[in-house]
Length: 96
Image 1 (cartoon, one colour):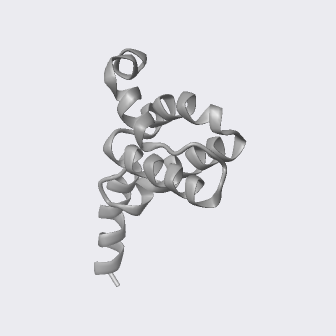
Image 2: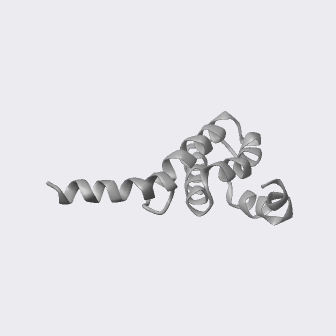
């Protein structure tokens, strides 16, 4: 992830992240973190976003950490755990 971040991904994501600790800035950081965690996995998203969020303060770091965990659970294709859980939930619903 360090190589990918150093060769363009870090600049691209850094341009999307707002600076500051206001509520709109933290919501934007959270939205970027959730979207990136859906596009790539949770751990690579953390590795890309944390170095970019640290200069904005603890609020931005907490927004990143929260939404890389919450974000993938919002869609079926967001995480492997959600993909594995879906067939069990469908089977339980049809057996009732």
